Length: 385
Image (cartoon, rainbow, N blue to C red; front, side, top):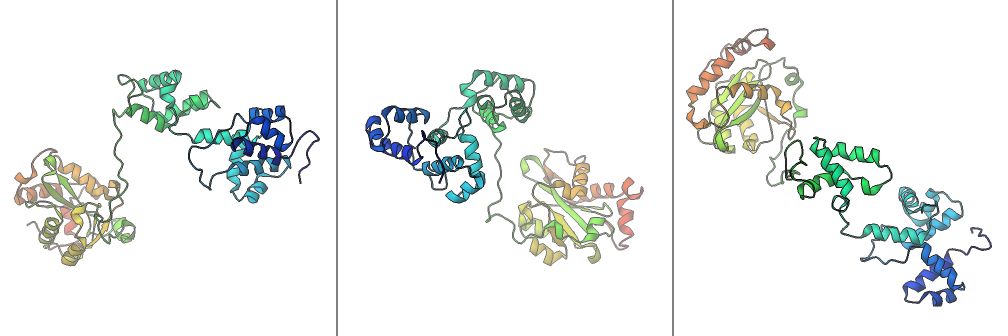
């Protein structure tokens, strides 16, 4: 049992006092019942900072008034925070944080004052800092005008005003202030120029996901090393309003390009039929693997594998560098097929001529050989259609 000085009562006494007050008794009557003077009860009440009641029931996973009384009793007895946590059935980190947050300015821990503060922190909605504080709002406006990012502003505020919560904001608060119009619309802008929050794609719904995708990490080592021809990367280049497309295939080892004509559209069935038909002339040993992004145009990849002999692998989401050779080739192709043009006007013959120009252009990465020469060293039977 903790040892109390002669003029200090055990915490059970003020605990009972506050229970009576919550039950509706006035201060004098509650003091008489617990055996203390009216002035002593008044001092308890003042030190606690009044007596608040939660507006909604508090979940059992949060600290209760009794938990905070047990913490105060344990501190008075000299027990460690870890021992107190074990006693009340909470994690020690919860008790450590409570002791730090619940201390008053003089360093003492008053369980009733700490409980009242916890109830105040729970109240919603909380006043918006940027709306309530003009100095804070002016500082943020000024730094945004100087093209600072919200992250830089947040860190600078923490350095200039340590220990002042009213002058500290997280980057998300600044973003929300911008999007909600709390800041100067004329001068306070993001460097990106964005005025509304960009929608975040949290994942593809399962009903739309491509089934049984083979991850890129399982692709053969020889494809990574670019030592063997027949490992291809594929993608689409899109036309105006995404209404037309051309398929692009490039061999990782030789940089040899094949363009896939898609006159009927670029949905999964059309992509399947075009890949099967327009790669049929490739020798079997040149059809090893095909790497694609997670576009739904390859939803029927298993059928493509069965009909072509390619083993298809998929990149990670939003990772174009995993098809770097294909991305580079698509950039070269934009010289022939500019963005914003209607790609349906190009015939299969046009695509063959463009592919021939690229394949007969010397490449430094190939030692100034052409992709056609490099591919012919692997397959003497390969010819243009």
